[in-house]
Amino acid sequence: MPAIVTAERLSKTFRVKVRDPGLKGALAALVRPRYRDVHAVRDVTFRIEPGEIVAFLGPNGAGKTTTLKMLTGLLYPTTGRVEVAGFVPWTGGRDFKRRIALVLGNRQQLVWDLPPEETFLLNRAIYDIAGAAYTERLAELVDLLDLRDVLEKPVRQLSLGERMKCELAAALLHHPPLLFLDEPTLGLDVTAQEAIRGFLSQYRERHGATVLLTSHYMQDVTALASRVLIINRGHLLYDGALDALVARIARIKRIELVLGPGDGVTAEMLAGFGTVKSFHFPNAVLEVRRDEAAATSARLLAALPVADLSIEDPPIEDVIRQAFAQGLGEDP
Image 1 (cartoon, rainbow, N blue to C red):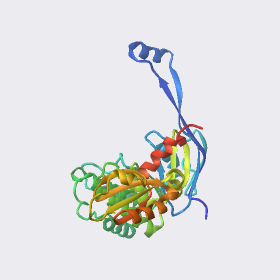
Image 2: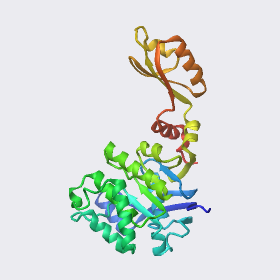
Image 3: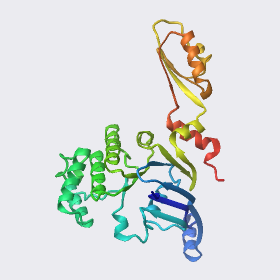
Image 4: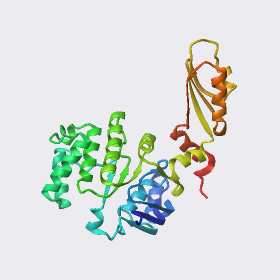
């Protein structure tokens, strides 16, 4: 089966006017304008297979949103080739748009003073969805997203989480096989984030949809994606399994302890087994070399009154930070 997304040596360069400060700089910019090139994306190549959920990670300004906009046809690349859902995005027309959905966490398509259902009906007309199919799809989305109580409320009266759910419903009424989600949980509370993640998992299981997701919330990544793309300064730095990234970058394991009754265990004693990250009796967290985790755990169990012990990888946020700290974010 061919890839649903193919990007080959994709680049985007913006020409930006340079202006010195003050009135003199403003006049000079009018008379003798100067420009500089900003390389937002540089020679990015990757493929996404049907049914995958892929996380697209990187700091602000790394090139994530620019790449999404090129994949969806909102921006033309400076160089490179793109094929999405069997189409070149800029020439695919209506048939291409029926195959994709783009949801931006900081943009909305809902009409502020009208209920969400009005936007749903508008999208039904735009995508020419038959009456029976619209009713069936809307009922499914209302059930999965728990929207029954908000359909008739004006959008301005909805919480941010409720609005984001309605945005997803509006974007998916035409059942696109490919979803581009740019920060879909941005600004949401923990409960709303979990609801969005649960919905995306269920929707993908039911319909086999492919998802390319950007997010600054690592819980989104660990809950949904097994593969990650990491971009920084426009360069693609990593493309592979999340577990492989952890094994490659994180040379440590965390040992989380719950100590049994009694006293006498001190931070100094624990330091003999590894780096003490936290110690508030009876709980302690140590960091040890990855290849020494099993042996250190055995030593701890033999030497201390341990009621419970678990070995974990470091938080994925720490792994991503280490990836850049170790020089992976530097220009080649």
